[in-house]
Length: 316
Image (tube, rainbow, N blue to C red):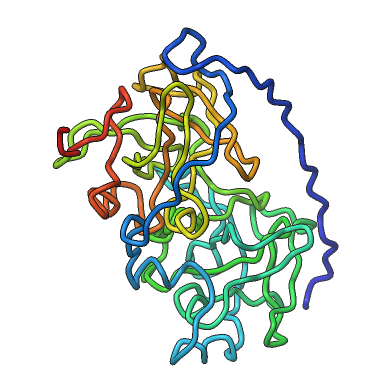
């Protein structure tokens, strides 16, 4: 590398969660309840995320496998630019947005995007990267990919471009599959600081629906249970297509009914958010904010209204 860097240490902070056993339907929204194991989702309930989203979810074989053998594309002089919706993010010397992948790790730096994934998300080369305005040189580093090439890291996170970003300033990769996000200068996900954890937006077809902090549509699974305590029937492979929504503080919401806005503990120990006590998820097949590709999947998945009801679900 032309510049000598030392990897920056990232300090992880631990949050203490007080688990309360308030049942749904009682006062005490924001409480945490324990869950019994529910039925596992049937194959038809999971849904097909499609080739577009699938290309960003991991490794693959075939013609795209040749991508991993190609050297990462040069980075040039990095800088910080501001997007009206996302906020401040890192761009390369050509003004292309740089991204990070949730399946990767920063401590230690590790890339998991190879083959077909690397064709859709070309890795950024480390050897010519320079710290421009707004970039701390100490946060720049590199990771050796499985093919032996050196990939740029920012705050420990491997950096990528998105093949569908065709012009400087494009941010089409933001939120793809719920796992790809523009890189901030400190290695964190770039996102507007004032975006609430849960909010609503008016969809032209579905009306007012709930979205997460990244603007991704939130869904309910009709095989879940809410009473007297939340139970999720989406487990195993189902969770790869339908990631759970992490806990959100009631005061970090906008437009969502706060009564029975609570979290619960899943069988694997993870905490999941609910609206009106119903477990909520995002869909890996939604590539960007505003997508509603999960609506009606398997006749069991539906967007969520501000009061927790499934939008467009058949009435029983």
